Every structure is written in structure tokens, then in C-alpha cells.
Image (cartoon, rainbow, N blue to C red; front, side, top):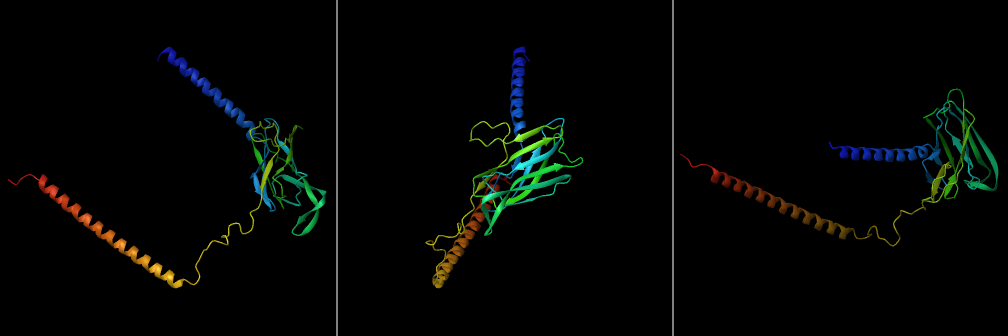
Length: 252
């Protein structure tokens, strides 16, 4: 291999390595954000989500997670899923006007959920933990922004509180978890339109006649196809025998 060719291959390898490092280097921090999963739910109903918390530190563990519910999107009820080795507390606040839940007025909304590690349950470096909750009724808003504080065993606190940005804009350094909310489907949305006939009433005899004619035609076409197929098979066999006779050597 010539020296120029080796130099070109080395340069290409270095460029590929730099590109790979750049892509992975940019992707790694983004994947380590605190997120809510799934990322969407339906307005007015109850949603089951999980807050996924990774530990970014190489030397400290995550010992506490505080999730603040947005004030502009009050939620009356929150149920938490047990996480081994973690305690949970739910704080509430007064709301005015009250929240309507199944026809009743509720004057309190959940303001914050806090998970605290006990014993050796802290989230260690290169690990993550999910904290499941069920909450609702979900408010009639486009999204819920959960500003979250992540406390480490060395005392550092990472504040995931940056508001979401417009599409195409640069992502903030510490984005808050965001749950998108979509409107519920209207009752009867999938029902047939009133002006569309889905069945004919009083035409039973006509339907039977049409069914009979259709069935007879289908049988006739099927029989004709079968006869044509057999005829083709016979002609093919005859042609094969004739060809073999012509190609056979004359008898001695």
C-alpha cells in the first residue's frame, strides 16, 4: 500500500472517530436528564406515569428526588407506587377556584411529591430509578411541567427546572420533565354519520335475490376456470410427450 493511500485512510479514520465522539458526546448528557414516561396523556382522565431519574455524578449517589406539580395545572389526586428502600411524602396546597372531581368541589391540590432514599437504596453512579405515580383528573391544559430537584449524597442539588423551548431552539441545560396532554375523544366520534345508510330495511327479498345471483355467477366463473386449467394441463402434457418422442434417437 502506498504512503499516500495510508495517509488518506488514517485521515478518514480520524475524521470518523471525531464525528462519532461528537455525536455520542452530545447524546450522552441528553439521555441523562430526569424525564417523565410516557410523555403524553389525555386531559380529564387519570394517567399513570413514571419519573425516570439517572445519576450523572461519577462519585455521588442520588438520595432525594422532589417533583413539583405546576400551579397552573392543579391535580386533586396522586397515588404513588412503592419503591423498595425509598420513603415518599405528598404535600398539598389550597386552590381557588376548587377543582371539580366527579361532580364534587375539591379545594386542595397536590403541590409536591418527595422520595427519599433509606439505607443503601440511593441511586448509584451509572444507574437510574423510576418512581411511578397515578395522577388525575388531568387538567385541561396542553402540558404539565414538573420542576424537579435531584439531591446527591455529597450535598449537590441539580435543579431540573428549565421551561420547555420552542421547536428547533437549543435545549436548555437542565430541562424540566414535561407531560403533553391531548383532548379526550368526543363521545360518538367513531359512530356512523346520520346521513349514511349502513343497512336497508324492508329489502330482505331483494337482498336474497342479489345474493343468489352473485353466488351463481361466482360458481359459474369458478367452474369455467377449473375447466380451462385442466385443458391447459392436458395440452402441456401432450406437448411434453411429443417433444420427447422427437428428441429420442431412432430405433436400431
